Image (cartoon, rainbow, N blue to C red; front, side):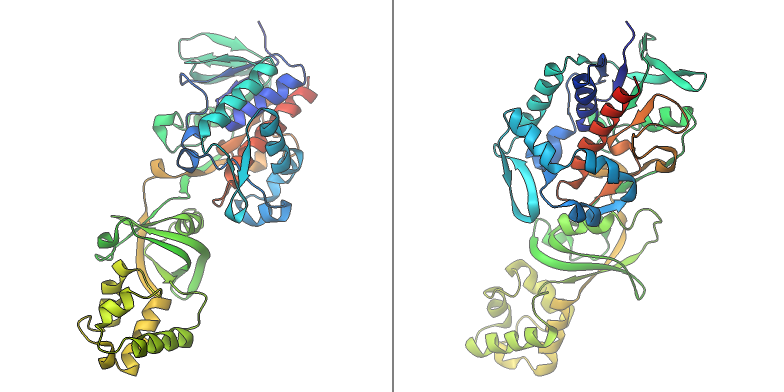
Length: 414
């Protein structure tokens, strides 16, 4: 049987693309090499699945790191309101949390996957599991089908490659789509890690493993040049730093890696340097006879676990009483709290990246349809494209939007 559309990959982009094409009356088969759909989707948001963000179009544009103009048509065709509306129709209640992040009310990615499977069934999409595609078949400038790992061919007029990137390889994202695209003449950038923890060299960092700093300002500098800056939560790890603000900053560092870089963290961005000094002076005055370490640890100015590090970096003796701290020492302590310095040696490996940066060169893809400009009937969607965004649900929305647009575009070409 010839299919109107063969979808390679059962992630969010593949499932939405297959269902969108099926809804238009196309004969669609979805080929997934795992034994279930949405394996990587089940991990997102620590299993809670931050499906999208409730921001407006301008908000999306400001949070897309790579090739935002290319995504204009896809995000207009299927935006966050349409996605949340579809999920509600499929029985998924949603909840909007801070910074517009949207989660299923159940906090379970499994509920989202079940809903998308229902969507595929409703639109008569045939799903085949354990079906690894090794090559896209083509001739005379257009696709003809695909070849499976068991040397069985599946013929079809259109092929949508939605195989994801090259991180979290155990979920099936092993870069197969990049290889298939190259074989068909497409250029592929990278892949490189995006949304990835950073490795630092300071020995005191490991001692703070597991400590989370809430709502800090952080910036990465190359000499005097600011490479990236942002605001959010930071997490210390055994190798360096992670957390939302660090993951966002990392996406600006990996395209042309140039390490080491300087990371500066402002623990108290709501206060100026003089205001921090004033707060310290007031704290010390209210705790006469108390040790500096205990007074600072009991305050809201710094987490207790960080106090020894702050005192060491500022050169202020932790054994001192607050009455013994002079103006110069108070100023040095305030400076460290406003300008905590770390040295970034690099990132964690690509396989640990939440999102893969790089991918199919978007100059070779029609942004209005997501069809290849090189090979007729060939479409791309999701993480395989050279697009990526910051944390907060934006990357999953890109996957859903590009999947939908590729599916309806294939239907228009029938």
